[in-house]
Length: 568
Image 1 (cartoon, helix red, strand yellow):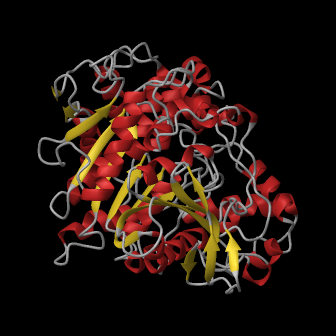
Image 2 (image 1 turned 135 degrees about the vertical axis):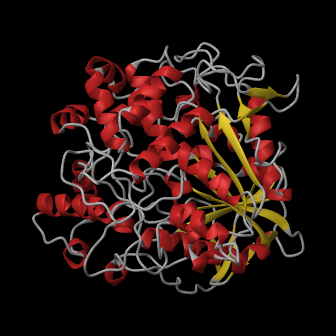
């Protein structure tokens, strides 16, 4: 049994650790509380049973193209703002490191009940693991004239405040909290890093395959307007609150079915709100690094990284890889529009990766633009404030076509590679040694702040997690050229047999292309680029004024359907 701020809970002992599931950290966000910031739950009398996962937030299912790869359980009920705790030693006095997991799913799908996210291995290794649910899609990230923005992000903040107040009762140290998340979860953490109201709630942060970013408010408004048109109601929170949540989820799925990270389009995301998110998170973290006080994340240790072939999860299951290869130069023109860059960037990528197909080049361009370049810029800016570590997950899935794709590393981080949900994405025969290395690094980072390889400095060290049996870190029979981490050039590599393999500056040449493009754009005259779906786009002052590809090319690029998955 354990005590929380709102009542006592009884968990279960499983495999030598105590597990508490479905603990409310906020009141059910429905009825008069729908589309509103979270409020504390009502206190309960007696001891509440915490043996099963609590309700999940309303969400549409994954499309058929992705449902066979990504498991997303649904638990019905209103009390969806809940969390789970795995601990090796419940009760005050243990003062163990704490890790708080924020799941991904494009801010539209996912939950803490996904089997891959089981926290037993972390508790086994001396960490108190907390996972949480938060509002998704239009319920959590819709933008309305009559409701505050970002209620889903406010849910996450409320959960972190619960951890700060209550985790000592479960054996955790509230002064040694590490937040970690993947994809949309990492994007959320990026926003929390820059949020003044979150300061002091965590000591360390892990961003897996997701950079700090804010979504253009007009993209979110367009999603809401599309849903309103399908539902035949006004685009207001009051009107949406009267819609059955099942009908709302169905309208959301239909409105967003053509959006994806590669193709762009309207989507739900965290927006600048002048309150919790006072400015673009990446801008705040980069520009405030030189502030006298070091900025909002000045004392937070960072672990940042990605998978080598992120784009393959977004392109392979839906058949878009073959489609983009057939489009050829039209696909590259669409990628230019998506990345708002001139022709020199894709031309430079072709020179660096001469063996790559058109689809691979498109995937690399978009992945670097959206993910790797922002994370590398964050690593550079944070270097003087607190230790920062960078990794790349390079082991290729045994499932044909997926390679080292988005979300593949999760079974290794949680050391849950043997559960069927992890095998769906990784295939059979994932190396046990790789899970031990990656999971162990996350545990060490939470415990000591040092995952086991050199911190980011002028030499730009990147820890490569790959098949321990290859010793080379290549794709080991994967779909790309043998050295996709650096193309035809060979960055300096250190690490002998049995040691962590570290590559210095593996993306320096790609990064140089983007920096040169930024310099060119700063001298250019704005030309009014098009959005990725071909509509006119208005850019705020200081945004890149790169021209877009012709409208016909962009439309043909986006015509292929992505199954509605934006980030997973």
